[in-house]
Length: 236
Image (cartoon, rainbow, N blue to C red; front, side, top):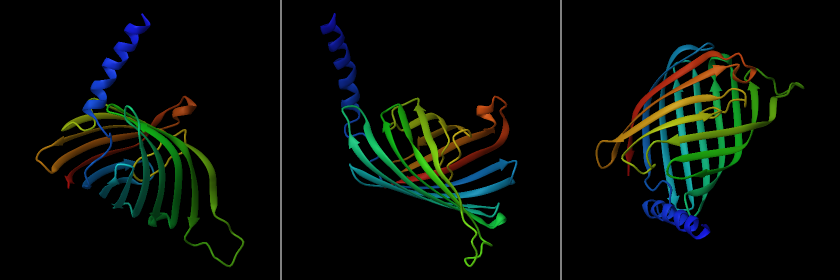
């Protein structure tokens, strides 16, 4: 019985490794997306997203992202990701720095995280901690006023894919408290769905939608906001 189970595990694992040697993003990518968004705080607004993925080598990749919003909110994000190849999939360290200038409210929101993640063909999961610092633009440097600091917050992210991630089309489902430009408190999860399709050798169309409820962990969830994105990616 034990020999049979061992043979079964090896038979299942070998095709996965063969279909996905050196798992991870291989191409440099430039993505541009238009976005419609609504939330109870900022109302209806539109966003322009520009994102670049730079896999410098099989062991390290970096992402740079910027978002301009008609809500007078401007966001930047940098992500540094050392990677370690596993027998199936890969392990990675997630180090992110986000800066959001909320001009409408005259304040800046800084967040930084350190986490550990694992991804394979059908699943990507992250778990870590992040710190938030909020600063008022009207704060005087000559007073004793201080920044608002949240030293420890839990970060989590689970994304499940319908097809292997190197497939020419895919559909995914997301549960997380972090997205491309924001890190929310652990009791404010985001739910998302995404899809892409390769339409030519270097071109990809992206579609996604995201919903944010409030009160999720207080057993009184109500709608807070939603976002819809559409755009394209050029793969170098």
